[in-house]
Length: 285
Image (cartoon, rainbow, N blue to C red):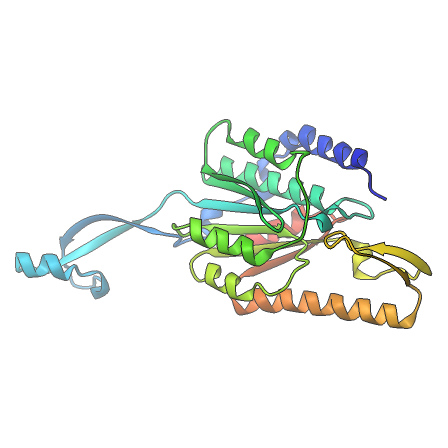
């Protein structure tokens, strides 16, 4: 049973240890991965042979009786939105608490993004939007993000991915990179994910616990769903329980994988007891 003291102890480790993170964990330029993130209008000039005709300004051309061409330049700054799951299921952990892993990954990413001179936003969510910090890149911004991530008053509750994605889709207008840190214990969010992915780069990072992947046969156990609060006495050693648990787990993960594949989004799966840095390095490379 995970106690509040255990959670606080892990959070303190994150608070004390995040500044030891070094930029070499995420070598390379984020913008080189997400090139073409957005274009800003720079100037008008006369059309030259070889210019892309799609960027001819026909209104100016008609007025000036000469063909004018719009010149754009790539935006130098990217906005990153880090979305962290604070639902009750994130408090589970057989070796490391999933929420603590999400916090550490989020802090490491924020650190690297800010060092790269891009802007970063943070949103904490469960069945509602608990906290939202707009994207900034200031000397004090990282401290604010860490204090928010390690807030001990986070409420928990159910996971609602669809509500989160709708919120982000409504507030983020400029093409951005959206990073979702969650265990994705949810369904019915593919439509919202598709809408978001049509406008932004979306990356899902699923944090799982080894014990969740295969429920140990331990005989009669009083189980409580952390999100619904419903308790049941079940025989975890029975064939029917093991079969049903495996079926639900496979269906949930299949829905997750299919949703990200069909919407053209990236998905990374991390076990809470493994070193996640090589996987994140590989993703951004």
